[in-house]
Image (cartoon, rainbow over all chains, first blue to last red; front, side):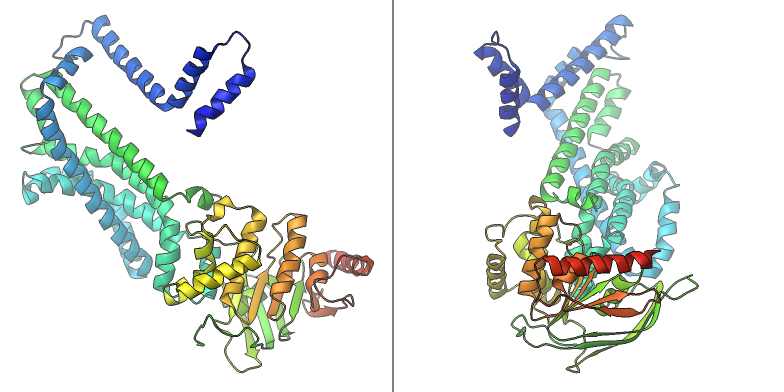
Length: 282
Length: 258
């Protein structure tokens, strides 16, 4: 952890004599886990706001249950929530895989074949005028009440951001790289694979970040329209039975999973595509 | 198309004759230049000086086969050995153009990867030897972003050498460097590329005077004018004679800018 050693030194330089060893250790601990502390404090503040609203406005539990009640339900229904969370998570992940590969394929085709670009791009942009959620009932009809319709739903809403970011990235390769490849006698495919594609990855990565955020929306909306499992299904069921605290516990699990998925993806992308800064400076 | 071979002896030297070169920007009334002739003698450095916009970079890009579709550009290019110029050039630009996702060694072996799809062990070995020659040992696995500007351009020079082509085209390769690094790299490049046919573009008179075996400048009529050079051999030291030449050259260019 280079961060805390550094911070510690800085404090040492600044500190006056009345600062003893234990406060040094405390400061070190604080700066070492700064991100975790920040997260904890944020969560605590949000929870107390929640509790404050419940208390101040005397909210009945069937409108806004207090946080403690929700946590009780969370622990009580742990295995049920986990079971349904796994269903939703699989839908999200499968949707991501399907959507990203479709987007990549479309972007590649638009790059390689001009007629495809001329005909497809306007259609693609126009298709965004249709709210994808309006398609949910049709998807249910076609793909049934199982996981397939949710996977397709999630894939459909991430398809556009992936296609456009990937296409943009592939198109805007720094010209210097392409010149160099040309003088080295690279053919079209090798240029695509060794130059254009890696140069497009940082742009594509931002598309993937967006996709990871919106894919859960697709999955949950799909579950609302008709399903027999998943967190969205659980929320609808609890809602119908006026078990609002159960609904909130499902919502919290969904939020935790989505946020976790985002941070996991973000750190993986940063780790495996570390050249985004270099390209940005060109 | 000549088959690229990494063990191509670098002493296969060739003259290049460019005749009737013309360049016309789209929507421009006047051509930038027309009916231009230039002879690049084998194994020598030909430096081209000129103000920005005079078309010197375009001339180099024409040789490199990098013609922008929006420019009307044409020329006859002949090599004295009768072979085509295709795939016998190496290109070095002002930016080092190191790919940020490849380490130094893979960047140097880029041509092998792009041309034949893979890099052989002997090519890697050759790249390591080259790095050692350029005092770059120990950074084989580093990424370009970890290197300083001068080091990066040295790696780019290693990549150019690795291509082992008889013709090298350099477009202001050192102009983004600080004075000391530029001075060092000029000497290094002159040393390692001394038996190649080099076309070197620059807007810096001192650099041109240090490195050129022949020096041309775009004159007011957009024709190439040969200029006298100091008597020593490149890379020349910056001495009184070179200083005097530089002074004369600057005055000449100053008049042209008016």
